[in-house]
Length: 328
Image (cartoon, rainbow, N blue to C red):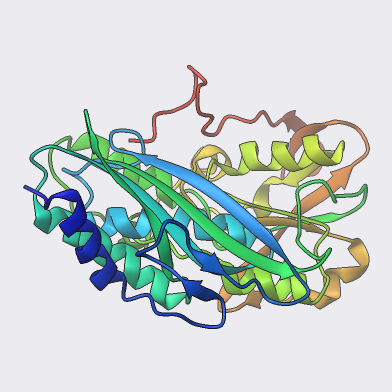
């Protein structure tokens, strides 16, 4: 069994090892954290639930991987705004009978990623869950005033780009579903690593924001088609995507790349005049041109011949949508 609440909080505090720094004046141990945001910056704040049976399964995902993935979701949101993470908060609800070893493993995965991106665990809460493990993660970040990149800035004629490759997340999920009670051997270790230990594209997002190259940006946690539709809706534009330009991951299909989620890559738009300033790789991650923002509303997938097109509907993950594919 896991420790009683007070002892568990002390253990988490030791595992987190968060100390006061230029941003964190006071962290775990008081009623509130005290933070000093960088001068001249605006704060970015995101919150993400991770639910057992929806975002992970303990029979498939190690505790270490679950902790990593829970924080990666929030860090990826900060990356999509071109921001820098400042601190994280974790509210953790645990079922009775859960072993302390599992909790320790979760915290190791969480804090290892936090330390990699200099994001101290500044506080949170604990509770007993009536069912599975529930983790609510809040990440606080910052960006210089009026520079954070949103979804609403895409303009007609802008180019569309994406980092990395797409489709591996759903490929791994299918393999896991084929073997309901154990982790299968996969043919593509890189895809497995990306699923269990995704890397938030913080360096790439910050690089693009600092150079004022992007007009809109979003992370691909729910699938390319769904995330592109969010940009189109918020910017009140349409889009066409050139089919051969889509970076399909090894072992994945075109449909996987278009609609599969759990990627944590960045989808962004940039004015056509910025094209020559966007390199093939940013912060070690490949960057691919996909298509163009259009005045006519709707999304379209253009054939290799450029002579035909088909409507591209948002068919990725949507919570509270009965037709959405299951995460796990």
